[in-house]
Image (cartoon, rainbow over all chains, first blue to last red; front, side, top):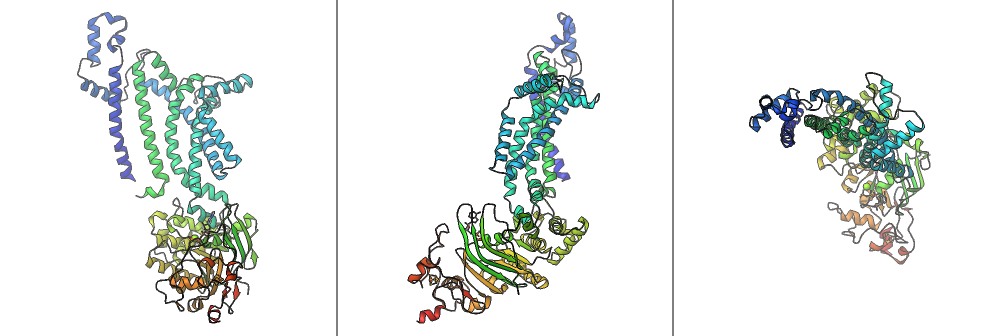
Length: 315
Length: 323
Ligand SMILES: Nc1ncnc2c1ncn2[C@@H]1O[C@H](COP(=O)(O)OP(=O)(O)OP(=O)(O)O)[C@@H](O)[C@H]1O
Ligand code: SF4
Ligand SMILES: [Mg+2]
């Protein structure tokens, strides 16, 4: 297991290298001369421009620029926002937890809805409960987030007045207020993943329920509840856990739109603002952070797969 | 004395309309092994699953299945569940897939114990190790902590046997328990079953299509054909004096057996389609001794001797051939 883990972590390095080259390349393709933008008022002064270029190594060959940039990135220095002159890393660290909270809540909601529904529809295959669960999954997958978001705001905020329609309270400030401001967006964000998880859980459970060991479990005289929730589910969850981890990554990127609908100052809002303002260092930092999160999540997926699958554990 | 298992007039009809078993009767006494033999598809597994109550929902089961006198058909699902793994246990053909890959061998045996007795987890775990020892698994304590994928097929089948016998069942159903194993392991597993049967007095219903296994391990034999028992007798008697033309053919088809009557070298033709079985004797289309009556009237299982029964219009065959 230890050696496997080392090898698996080692495999990430080439992926990250390729990613970094791509992101660095992106920087080169960005329109506008950074020196001109950074010079601001003094952009007419060639001496100032030359000084900035020298500081940013813009007068050096590309590979040297790349190495210098990598060196900075490795130290957590993602550069400065052109618009608000704040370190990009600071912006990311400020916004990421907001999106992470939203994503985590959405994921919990998705798991709580999707997995039990998937089990139910597998156990009641081709019965009304199965049809209803499949219908719900289709609804969750195909309902556009913005539309569901608007409907929910209309119902829970405008009609019933139970929840604030927008805004965000940090969880460190007021736990329940924080939940109140994020529960609706989390639900909206989670429905799609709930649908995907439901379909995968259903398929995996159907597969597991037809296995010989399920017949053995019944032959032992176990209650059907134990047969389903212990013997079948334990095996069915192995592929679902892997999928769930990847879906969590998709949730984080799906948050961009949902954060707009509910005016939540998270990662998504940071990206959208940065794109509209052509604040390229921020865009680049966000892309880099997102890529890193995805790589780490796929590593986590592999580790979890290993941890819950005894057939691989001791290999 | 009431037999441990008494099956009378059992019929099984699958949801797709296929009548896999029709009017089947069997008896097994305590400490006895009844071998059920017959070609693939004749309804052996369906019969076993009907006895232990594991046929898929929607399957119609008729007749009577009595365990020590208690009728099992028509029991509430929860009552039947309590008997499964308790009074009736079953082991299956595929040891490679019959154990759950996600749990250790010890856990799976302990779970079978705790399903029927109110004892602590620790106690059940200890008993599980003891059971693994009883099925002659060396280094049982260590093996108990292993997962199925760390074991050979023979070892897994031993774990299955430990699990099945953990609650001292009155009846053990073994559905081709050694078919998937190689020959030496087969012999070991069958010898183990014999030994455990002698120790515990469990009645064994041994399903097989291997006549060698029958000769060495069965007290009594029931020969099935197309969903019915066509002949049953003590093992020695069946081999010495088979009466039913199908049994004779089966023994003749056995490569190593010198068939006493050698009337049939092998059985021509194929098993009838159980969706539309022939109206009379089901073996009639393949039977060289067929007479007019065979095509219209199904022969009933009739006693030839105290323990020998045959379902054939021409039994006893030798007398009838001589006539
Ligand atoms: N669930 C089912 N639905 C419909 N038909 C079935 C079902 N299970 C078994 N059958 C059919 O019932 C008949 C008896 O099957 P069974 O499994 O009892 O045979 P078997 O004697 O155990 O054969 P084998 O030696 O191959 O194990 C076969 O024709 C089979 O195709
Ligand atoms: S009843 Fe007739 S057809 Fe059937 S086995 Fe006997 S002789 Fe053959
Ligand atoms: Mg079978």
